[in-house]
Image (tube, rainbow, N blue to C red; front, side, top):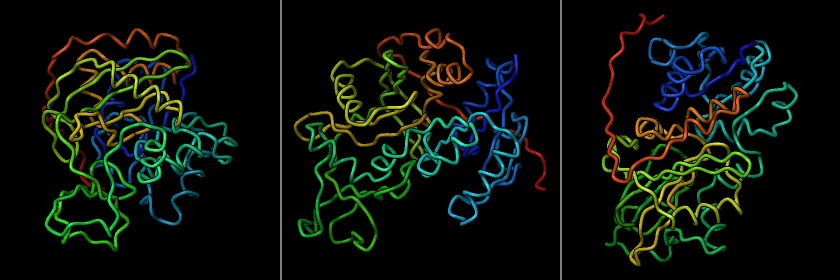
Amino acid sequence: MTKKKIFILAGGTATAWHLCNLVKERFAGRFELCVGDSNDQSLVPASTLSDNYFQLPPINDPVYYSYMLNLMEKEKMNIVVPLIDFDLAIFPNDNPDVVKLNLLSTAPDASIMEICISKSKLSKLFENNGIPVPKQYESSNIIPEKSYFVKPDTGFGSKGVRIVKGKDIDFSEKIIIQEILQHPEITVEVFKKDDFWAFVCRERLEVKSGVCTKARFFQDKGLEEIIHRMDALVPLPLASCIQFMKNEDQEWCLTDLNMRLGAGTALSSAAGFGLASAFLSVLSGNGDFKDYLGSVSNNQMVVRVYHEIKMPCMS
C-alpha cells in the first residue's frame, strides 16, 4: 500500500506529539510522517518521530503562506493537519490553493473558520440561537471594582486569558469581557463522520499552561444535546473539542469551540476513547475508525506525567 504523506503543523505542541506517536505506533504502514514548526528541530520533541522535519517561518511572517504552499507542492504532501486556529484559518479545506495541490486539509471550510476565528462573532451567533454563552460586557457597562473574565478575541491555548478588575482592563486591546463562570470546567471531545457521532466528557481537574493534566471522565446527555444544536449552526469537522462551564443559574455555557484536536486529547486516548486514532484512521482511508472509540466508564480518572527526551544538539 502506498503511504500517504501527512504534514502535521505546530509540531511543538502536545497535540502534535500525541498524533505523531500514534502514527508511529498504529499507522506506520499508512503514513509517511512530516512535521513542521517554527522552532529548530532540537527544540521539537515530535521531530524525533518524524520521517521529515521542516523548520518553518513564524506564522505572522509575510512569506509564511507562499513558503508553505511551495513546500507542500515540492514535497508532494497529501494531507495537512493544522493544529492552531491561525493555521486553520489560513489553510481551510476549500482554500483554492490547497485544492489545486490536491491536498486534503483537516481544517473546516473558510466560511466556518471566518466565524470561529472571532470569539465575539461566534458567541453572538450562538446567543442569538438560544445556545447559552457567558454574559458579555461593553466598556460602558464595566464596574471598576468588579472582577471580569478577559480574553483576546482571537487566540488559542488560553494565551492572554485572565481575571481582572474592571479598573485594570486595557480597552486598547481587541478583547472579550465576560462574566466569571463557575466550575466544573468541562471539555467535550467529539468525533463526527457523516451521520456517525461519538462523544466523551472530561472534567478538567488540573490545568497547567491551559492544558489539562488531571481529568475525570463522564457522559452527559445535556451537553450532547447542546453540541448537536451547535453543529446545526456551525458544522463540526472530523474531530473537535468544546469547552463548557456553568453560569450562576447552573446552566452549561459554551466557553470555547476548537475545530481541531486539543492538547488534552491524549488523556481521552488513555481513558479508551481514541479520538486521535479514529481521526488518523479516516485520513488513512480505512473504515476501522469505530474500533478506536471505546466507551469510557463514568468517573474514570486519567493523569498526565511528563517525559524527558534527549534531543540532538542545536544546528
